[in-house]
View 1: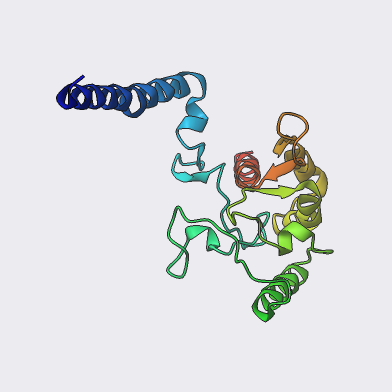
View 2: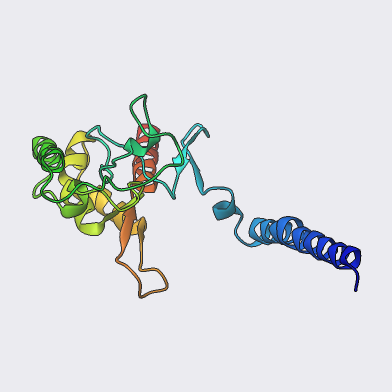
Length: 200
Protein backbone atom coordinates (compact mmCIF):
# COMPACT_ATOMS: atom_id res chain seq x y z
CA UNK A 1 0.00 0.00 0.00
CA UNK A 2 1.22 3.49 -0.82
CA UNK A 3 2.34 6.06 1.70
CA UNK A 4 -0.61 8.25 0.76
CA UNK A 5 -3.03 5.38 1.37
CA UNK A 6 -1.53 4.60 4.79
CA UNK A 7 -1.58 8.27 5.75
CA UNK A 8 -5.21 8.61 4.67
CA UNK A 9 -6.12 5.51 6.66
CA UNK A 10 -4.34 6.84 9.77
CA UNK A 11 -6.05 10.22 9.50
CA UNK A 12 -9.43 8.52 9.06
CA UNK A 13 -8.90 6.32 12.13
CA UNK A 14 -7.77 9.32 14.16
CA UNK A 15 -10.89 11.26 13.22
CA UNK A 16 -13.17 8.33 14.05
CA UNK A 17 -11.51 7.86 17.45
CA UNK A 18 -11.68 11.59 18.09
CA UNK A 19 -15.42 11.69 17.33
CA UNK A 20 -16.00 8.64 19.58
CA UNK A 21 -13.91 9.76 22.56
CA UNK A 22 -14.19 13.56 22.40
CA UNK A 23 -17.80 13.98 21.26
CA UNK A 24 -20.03 10.91 21.45
CA UNK A 25 -18.72 9.47 24.75
CA UNK A 26 -18.82 12.76 26.76
CA UNK A 27 -22.31 13.58 25.45
CA UNK A 28 -23.52 10.07 26.32
CA UNK A 29 -22.07 10.23 29.85
CA UNK A 30 -23.51 13.73 30.36
CA UNK A 31 -26.96 12.62 29.22
CA UNK A 32 -26.95 9.53 31.47
CA UNK A 33 -25.74 11.58 34.45
CA UNK A 34 -28.46 14.20 33.95
CA UNK A 35 -31.13 11.51 33.88
CA UNK A 36 -29.86 9.16 36.60
CA UNK A 37 -27.90 11.49 38.94
CA UNK A 38 -28.95 15.09 38.15
CA UNK A 39 -28.18 16.48 41.65
CA UNK A 40 -24.66 15.04 41.74
CA UNK A 41 -23.97 15.79 38.05
CA UNK A 42 -24.74 19.46 38.59
CA UNK A 43 -22.36 19.83 41.52
CA UNK A 44 -24.58 18.86 44.48
CA UNK A 45 -25.33 22.55 44.99
CA UNK A 46 -27.04 23.57 48.23
CA UNK A 47 -29.35 26.64 48.47
CA UNK A 48 -30.14 28.63 51.61
CA UNK A 49 -33.65 29.48 52.80
CA UNK A 50 -33.93 32.29 50.24
CA UNK A 51 -32.93 29.95 47.40
CA UNK A 52 -29.47 31.47 47.00
CA UNK A 53 -26.70 28.94 46.39
CA UNK A 54 -24.40 28.73 49.41
CA UNK A 55 -22.07 25.92 48.41
CA UNK A 56 -21.69 22.32 47.34
CA UNK A 57 -22.30 19.28 49.52
CA UNK A 58 -19.13 17.84 47.95
CA UNK A 59 -16.70 20.60 49.00
CA UNK A 60 -16.05 21.86 52.51
CA UNK A 61 -16.22 25.47 53.54
CA UNK A 62 -15.28 27.43 56.62
CA UNK A 63 -17.78 27.93 59.47
CA UNK A 64 -16.23 29.96 62.28
CA UNK A 65 -19.16 31.39 64.24
CA UNK A 66 -20.46 29.57 67.30
CA UNK A 67 -24.04 28.88 66.09
CA UNK A 68 -22.60 26.58 63.42
CA UNK A 69 -20.70 23.32 63.42
CA UNK A 70 -17.09 23.84 62.35
CA UNK A 71 -15.58 22.04 59.37
CA UNK A 72 -12.14 20.51 59.17
CA UNK A 73 -9.28 23.01 58.85
CA UNK A 74 -8.10 23.66 55.31
CA UNK A 75 -4.67 24.57 53.95
CA UNK A 76 -6.43 26.17 50.97
CA UNK A 77 -8.97 28.01 53.19
CA UNK A 78 -11.67 26.40 51.02
CA UNK A 79 -10.84 28.95 48.30
CA UNK A 80 -12.40 31.83 50.22
CA UNK A 81 -11.01 35.33 50.63
CA UNK A 82 -8.04 37.19 49.19
CA UNK A 83 -5.42 35.01 50.86
CA UNK A 84 -6.97 31.75 49.72
CA UNK A 85 -5.77 29.34 47.09
CA UNK A 86 -7.70 29.82 43.81
CA UNK A 87 -10.80 27.66 43.40
CA UNK A 88 -10.11 24.25 41.94
CA UNK A 89 -6.80 23.66 43.70
CA UNK A 90 -6.68 21.15 46.50
CA UNK A 91 -3.72 19.70 48.33
CA UNK A 92 -2.25 19.02 51.72
CA UNK A 93 0.35 21.38 53.15
CA UNK A 94 3.15 18.79 52.67
CA UNK A 95 4.71 19.98 55.92
CA UNK A 96 6.67 17.38 57.88
CA UNK A 97 5.28 16.41 61.32
CA UNK A 98 8.25 18.17 62.93
CA UNK A 99 7.81 21.39 60.95
CA UNK A 100 7.39 24.39 63.30
CA UNK A 101 4.79 25.99 61.01
CA UNK A 102 2.61 22.88 61.17
CA UNK A 103 2.95 22.60 64.93
CA UNK A 104 2.12 26.29 65.30
CA UNK A 105 -1.01 25.94 63.14
CA UNK A 106 -2.19 22.86 65.06
CA UNK A 107 -1.66 24.54 68.43
CA UNK A 108 -3.57 27.62 67.27
CA UNK A 109 -6.45 25.41 66.15
CA UNK A 110 -6.49 23.54 69.46
CA UNK A 111 -6.52 26.85 71.36
CA UNK A 112 -9.37 28.18 69.21
CA UNK A 113 -11.48 25.06 69.79
CA UNK A 114 -10.90 25.21 73.52
CA UNK A 115 -11.91 28.89 73.59
CA UNK A 116 -15.28 28.05 72.01
CA UNK A 117 -15.76 25.11 74.40
CA UNK A 118 -15.11 22.24 72.00
CA UNK A 119 -13.44 19.72 74.29
CA UNK A 120 -11.68 17.53 73.75
CA UNK A 121 -10.68 18.70 70.24
CA UNK A 122 -10.98 15.69 67.94
CA UNK A 123 -8.35 14.82 65.34
CA UNK A 124 -10.32 15.90 62.28
CA UNK A 125 -11.08 19.30 63.83
CA UNK A 126 -7.35 19.88 64.24
CA UNK A 127 -5.76 18.20 61.20
CA UNK A 128 -6.55 18.91 57.56
CA UNK A 129 -7.63 16.21 55.13
CA UNK A 130 -5.49 15.11 52.19
CA UNK A 131 -7.38 17.37 49.76
CA UNK A 132 -8.12 20.12 52.32
CA UNK A 133 -11.61 20.26 50.83
CA UNK A 134 -13.31 17.53 52.87
CA UNK A 135 -17.01 18.39 53.45
CA UNK A 136 -17.39 15.88 56.30
CA UNK A 137 -16.39 15.60 59.92
CA UNK A 138 -16.56 12.48 62.05
CA UNK A 139 -19.60 11.80 64.22
CA UNK A 140 -17.35 12.28 67.27
CA UNK A 141 -16.38 15.75 66.03
CA UNK A 142 -20.03 16.71 65.60
CA UNK A 143 -20.87 15.46 69.09
CA UNK A 144 -17.90 17.40 70.53
CA UNK A 145 -19.45 20.61 69.14
CA UNK A 146 -23.02 19.80 70.14
CA UNK A 147 -23.00 21.70 73.44
CA UNK A 148 -21.36 24.75 71.86
CA UNK A 149 -23.92 24.99 69.05
CA UNK A 150 -26.88 24.32 71.32
CA UNK A 151 -25.80 27.07 73.73
CA UNK A 152 -25.24 29.58 70.93
CA UNK A 153 -28.68 28.89 69.46
CA UNK A 154 -30.47 28.67 72.82
CA UNK A 155 -31.56 25.11 72.04
CA UNK A 156 -31.21 21.85 73.91
CA UNK A 157 -28.77 19.21 72.74
CA UNK A 158 -31.78 16.92 72.26
CA UNK A 159 -33.08 19.34 69.61
CA UNK A 160 -29.88 19.15 67.58
CA UNK A 161 -28.72 15.54 68.08
CA UNK A 162 -31.31 14.09 65.64
CA UNK A 163 -30.01 16.44 62.93
CA UNK A 164 -26.52 14.99 63.34
CA UNK A 165 -27.96 11.52 62.81
CA UNK A 166 -29.97 12.73 59.80
CA UNK A 167 -26.92 14.17 58.04
CA UNK A 168 -24.52 11.33 58.85
CA UNK A 169 -23.51 9.45 55.72
CA UNK A 170 -22.47 5.82 56.08
CA UNK A 171 -19.43 4.01 54.76
CA UNK A 172 -18.96 4.05 50.98
CA UNK A 173 -20.51 0.82 49.64
CA UNK A 174 -21.00 -0.15 53.25
CA UNK A 175 -17.34 -1.09 53.81
CA UNK A 176 -14.98 1.75 52.86
CA UNK A 177 -14.09 4.60 55.21
CA UNK A 178 -15.99 5.74 58.28
CA UNK A 179 -19.38 7.43 58.70
CA UNK A 180 -19.16 11.21 58.29
CA UNK A 181 -21.40 14.21 58.94
CA UNK A 182 -21.87 16.64 56.06
CA UNK A 183 -21.23 20.00 57.73
CA UNK A 184 -22.89 22.24 55.15
CA UNK A 185 -26.09 20.17 55.10
CA UNK A 186 -26.17 20.02 58.90
CA UNK A 187 -25.70 23.78 59.30
CA UNK A 188 -28.37 24.46 56.70
CA UNK A 189 -30.75 22.22 58.64
CA UNK A 190 -30.00 24.26 61.79
CA UNK A 191 -31.05 27.42 59.97
CA UNK A 192 -34.25 25.73 58.82
CA UNK A 193 -34.97 24.68 62.40
CA UNK A 194 -34.39 28.22 63.68
CA UNK A 195 -36.60 29.70 60.96
CA UNK A 196 -39.44 27.26 61.67
CA UNK A 197 -39.34 28.13 65.38
CA UNK A 198 -39.49 31.83 64.60
CA UNK A 199 -42.66 31.28 62.58
CA UNK A 200 -44.47 29.69 65.54
